[in-house]
Length: 263
Image (cartoon, rainbow, N blue to C red; front, side, top):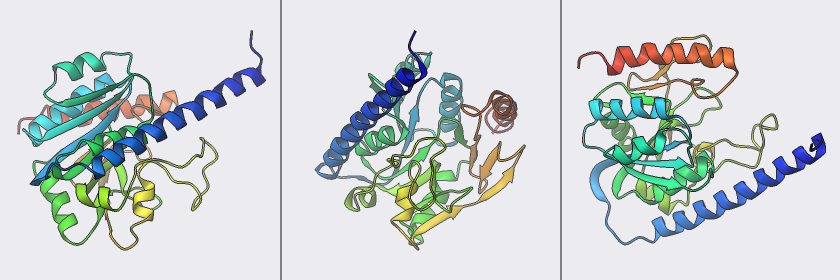
């Protein structure tokens, strides 16, 4: 049986290798996106998300998109899920990218952004979904007001990828990326580290439109609604078991309230 040192070494090798593969794939796809010659369809949005073994949330997010923004183009990057996610994606009316291994959230969003063919894109976490038919118009209006990036915020003053929008050409021309820095859990240093998408806001001072919560269910930040347009459940797919259980209860409530309720 491998000892603690061997397990730690194997974990570090896996982390470094996956990081290198994800960085390379994301960089290559960003290059392809920047040099593509197909014109972007004006006025339209593409919704982007990254999935990993969260089939139950994926289904609800797709249902919400169908209810509140029917016909919008959707790109889902799947990070080598082993649950029912891939069957769902193959049957859904979305464009899916089925990766052979888990490259991470940031690389997945970079890959998705490289495939966009519309003037705008919006990102959602898998445990987020729109709650208003005006959500994309709201985000477009905030971009038209002079912002380069807009998004929901809870801490550190950045546009969070659980609800974030940009003009596709700005993302490409300004060489942005969703990649996070090299910190590991517990090693985050404010100002020296950044999470997925955080670097975008850091590079656009004065041009970040932050959408603050209009309601929070609790406990903590479980069950947040950004500006009355997008619901995000912070711990339904991650966090300690007790917190996750409370988050999933809140998720079920939100699905009944926003998705299952008559329009």
